[in-house]
Amino acid sequence: MSSVGRQRWWALIALAVSSVAIGLDVTVLNLALPTLAVKLHASSGDLQWFVDAYTLVFAAVILPAGLAGDRYGRKRWLLGGLVLFGLASVFCAFSGSVAALIAARAALGLAAAVVTALSVSVLPVMFTQEERPTALAILFGSAMLAYPIGPLLGGWLLTNYWWGWVFLINVPIVLLALYAVGRFLPESRSEHRPRLDVPGVAISSVGLAALTYGVIEAGQHSWGYGRALVGMLGGVVVLLAFWAWERRLSARDGGEPLVDLTLFRSRGFSAGTALATLSTLVMFGLLYAMPQYFREIAGTTAMGAGARLLPTIGGLLVGLLVATALQRSPEHSNAKLAAGVGFVVMSAGVVIGTGTAVHSHEAFIAMWFAIVGFGLGFVLPTTMNAALGAISAERSGVGSALIMALRFVGATIGVAVLGTILNDGYRGRLEQAHLPAGAAHVARQGVVDGVALAEHLRSPALLDTVRSAFVHGLDLTLLACAGIGVAAILIAVVALPARAPGTATDIDANAGERATDRGSAHGIAV
Image (tube, rainbow, N blue to C red; front, side):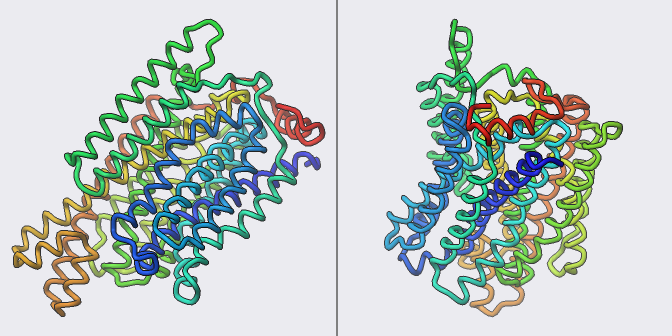
């Protein structure tokens, strides 16, 4: 491999480091919330806004972030996003009030949107169709490592050091990513600088933020809750208006919409994005439910819960390796087959997981976790490669941001829906137990409150009831995940092309090296 070819892969490692920083921040925050409640005298509503400020800004900014990369330079904006992420992490650590931390979390959400959109956007520019599955495997594998590492590292820091260190751990990672991105990643942008679709940017940002807010409220309260309905319905209406505006702009002579709606005519883009979203939905549903099982049912610490996620990550990494090896072999490369097999394996894993009981052996849980991870490892690079293959290098920023926005909103909706299934199953089983009114009211708030009440009352019977009720809700959630997997299998078989296209610019086997060479040697657009 030439020095230019090696530089592309070093640039990818730099992007992977950036993904780890973002993943760590998300996982560590959830762990730190009880400590923040005490240190900053934060209410439960304040704690929710520590999370929501990040989420809503991320949803609102991700499409404009992709456009900015296409228009002004992807490397430039990626470096700016990393700098902001590092600075916002420092501000989080030294926040002395609730308002200051919410503002810093919003800045983190903005930075994360830029880094996420542009990390993916450079892949169609730097790598060919055959290389992209490997690049995607490295990027997503690195991001997934943050989920077990976050609780392990965060728990250790919270146990032994000042709480601000859970945010400051981002800084050395960001510094490493800044050096590597600056050193190895070539600059790239559209040769024809796209116009700034101001109405499209504004409407899409409002619509995505409103829909996300409504779904979050539905997950916290109920799907009939007033603010949830207003947010969701309002978001859908605004996004329909965005679609109508983009169609009108596309039909106008010289019109340059924010989103290229013709992408949705591509089976690779539409089916690939839908399948990547469904896999993300299942993955985040498990990451929502299973840590609660480990902590409240199995009685582990946060660090212990993180360690028990490792079999999923191990299975995912093995699946990524096998899937990418097949994708690189032309005679065995079949996206339809790979995605279908991946979802079959994933669905089988979650069905086996419905056998999880209050006192299940850790080896059993590790086994079905690894199976689910293996299936996801097959699905993620295959479906994302199919979607990215339909995007031109000219508009890879907005195209990649669109994929990530759809995945993000889909995952948010999925976690809310699966969380509702889990909680409704839990509460329904509690009602069948005919608990005393006072105990039932407290236990219905959630498994954490139920276990705490049982331990406070020193009631083994109540503790068994609460834990059994949660496991019942978990079984229903896993069955729902299996149903999602079956739907994904049908989509893969019917709609996903067997082969992903190169890109709309029809790059050849040396295009990635030429793009790197032009960008690094001359700093011009590619």
